[in-house]
Length: 120
Image (cartoon, rainbow, N blue to C red; front, side, top):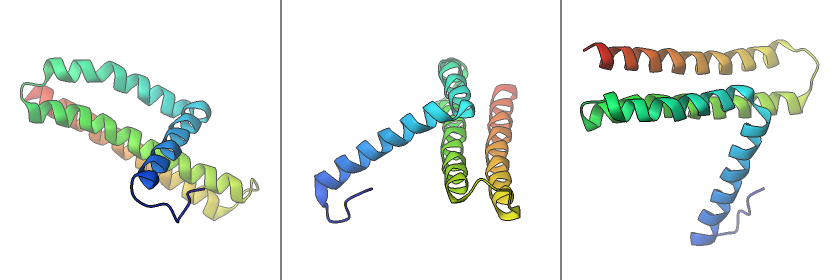
């Protein structure tokens, strides 16, 4: 847990360490995150090659970053729900379904972005 008394550079360094632990935990425990990272690694060079302007390249790559961001948040939601209890509960299921829907929407937005830029 973060030390709330830390200030300045020490707080920033602590935040970086905790972020590293978050990436590591997500990589180790979430197959979807690993798949999306691999998709990001494949699509980034393609975006740099196919994007005609800096804005197009940023939109193509940024849409994939959005997927990773939403997956990290979804994984956090799932971890908290599982921590609270493994028994089935309507609200737990709803929270997980909503997180999954957010990931799905980010993937749809990525597809729309890529198709729009590549077609026009």
